Image 1 (cartoon, rainbow, N blue to C red):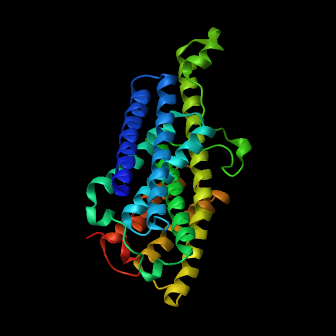
Image 2: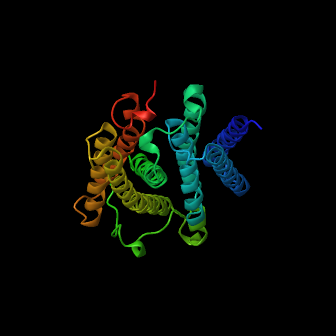
Image 3: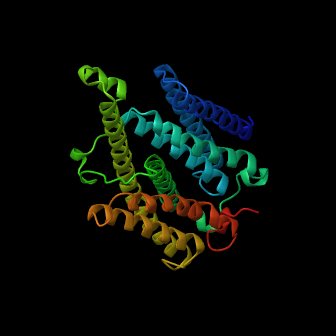
Amino acid sequence: MNWNSIENSLINIAFIFLLMTLIIYWLNLIVTNIKVLNKTAQALTMMSNILLSSSLILRWIHNSYFPLSNLYESLIFLTWSLTFVQIILEKQNNSKLIGSLIAPIALFTIAFASISLPNTMKQAEPLVPALRSNWLMMHVSIMMISYATLIVGSLLSILFLIISQGKNVNIQGKSYNPAQKILLKYSTSNDTLKNNTNRQTVSIHNTIYYYNRLNLLESIDNLSYRIIGLGFPLLTIGIIAGSVWANEAWGSYWSWDPKETWALITWLIFAVYLHSRLNQSWQGKKPAILASFGFIVVWICYLGVNFLGKGLHSYGWIS
């Protein structure tokens, strides 16, 4: 039995499903609003996640190590993490905005892994001595899940800035108090007007539009904060686990390797973001701008430093 062919088939099918998901989400967001299409996109996302899970499990069984030893495997795992986060969020928040944001990123990662990387990087090879440790599963998997979570939270901050462009936004309430926030569910102008049939004037229309837009911005802001609040401790645990593993493998907890340095920069950026939100030292768009910058830093930390081909993490470099 050709295990590589089965893995490639599963990943290719997942790619097709994610492409269909992206088209459906954007079509449903821009052109029409049909609940059946939204349910179909969610089902395709779940099927893609199952296919990616199957390919990773097959690779794990066939090669006898957890499949996170090179860039190709980590990209597949990142795609799995993104779709997993999307499924969880869509269960909690009935909004098509979430899928419309995450689907392009998931599609990009799986396309980059399948199309851009050479076949030699896709082949499983014996682990280098530094990776022959039980820390491989804990450290790398937690780091990848934290990357996926922080990417989603940062994307929502970018969406917040796009929607609030040209507006002076002053978010009401405290972000760390969920009771003063609403989830990513908001009423349309038509729904609100049904309850105000006697007030159908131009001024009321404008008031309703402003109210719904403010509710949407507060929802996005709150959800972004909560997702980043989840991703940050995962990143912290991943860095600590990596430090302990580094001491076992190389005899030093910290070596200022490019990957380690950018992981610290990523940690500091989101630490400042969370600190500013907790003590409310920054208001309006400033925290969202910092979180949006964090989106770029996460990608540099994960993917950008691999182009250097240097350092203790160079086993995942791009030739």
